[in-house]
Image 1: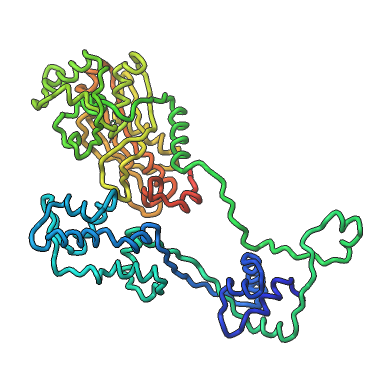
Image 2 (image 1 turned 120 degrees about the vertical axis):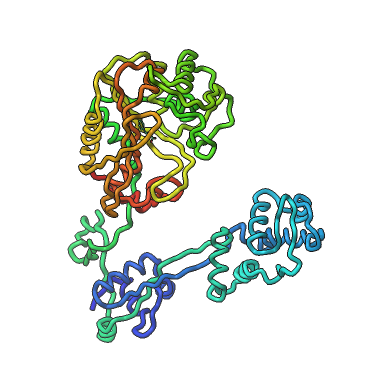
Length: 503
Ligand code: PHE
């Protein structure tokens, strides 16, 4: 049998009884690892060798891990300094112990967190008490770290300690696939019958053409089915693609784009929306307050009208909140929790002057909420804000607008649920069904602005408005089941590389 030279070399080096990793075959034959790998796969395709894959895990100390091998883990240094300072007998001021332990920068937090976790002692009101019976000599993480640094096989180290060291970023875990090769019966037979290197030529040169040599040589066959290296070009992020499509759709529906500050006065974010100043969403829990000077350019007459709406309500039988209202609070700056702040700026006439109906405006912009991160919540996300001002609007107009909008994305089964917002009446939440999980997920919130909002703004017509979640729309169009796969530090790069957006 005639085979290309690398294949002959690999075949001769492989064994029928012992699995050999490709790396070892490469070393033995003197072939480059990629040439050996290619030869192995070609031999496998011809049925001459078998390839098995196993996952191997290797560990490597990080720079921080290596530093602690010499200096000791921060919590152990803290413990030793604490005992030295007499903290095993009675609590000692924390600052003193930290100083004596020579911990600085991030090491202090690391030491304190692990000190408590490992039961080296307790920290209470700035004082540190050490447990005199603790034994830092046998600290499992320290022992494991030193053992690994000394070349010990990770197999002999407790899994839990390995996991801890990895999660503390003192150790890196590398997983790789090892491919091992054995000869098949056909491979053994071929070797017994004799295998020769075929002298093949892998490219045609001008010299071969002029000399006529090309007529006599044998050309290497191309394996057009071989795996080729993946080429990854840059591409627009799925979320950006979706945002752009949303803009196109809304512009197509006659909307104009709004623009405005990410950090804004509470006045625009909340007060104009008839959100009482003691509303739970306005407390520091939900709000990213910024420690910057308050806004100074609010339209005074608008401030007065908004304050009056809060205190007394609007209209003849209107009623206010009877709760405190302070202009200082209204002027304080925070990151906007919704882009309805932009709608307020535009509707008030301060952004682009007074607007005559009909008007349609939208934005696709970032908002910030002090929420708990989970599969459907991010702390920063994009809102598709929008509003329509016209002579006469009804809930049917609002629902119809959503049906028309979502249809452009192939979503034809949105559902509405009555809702409450301090600034709209009636209000509706929108739901869409996730294409893979089948779950109904909330995709937006909407309603008709109430008089308490419109009258102070000087708007005399109906306004229907909404805030839709761009990420949730992208979850429906891409099938992403976890919003964190889409963007943020946990984004799933493989998903983003392969994600297909359907609309
Ligand atoms: N601001 C609302 C939210 O963030 C959305 C909304 C805007 C609802 C305008 C009604 C009217 O959920």
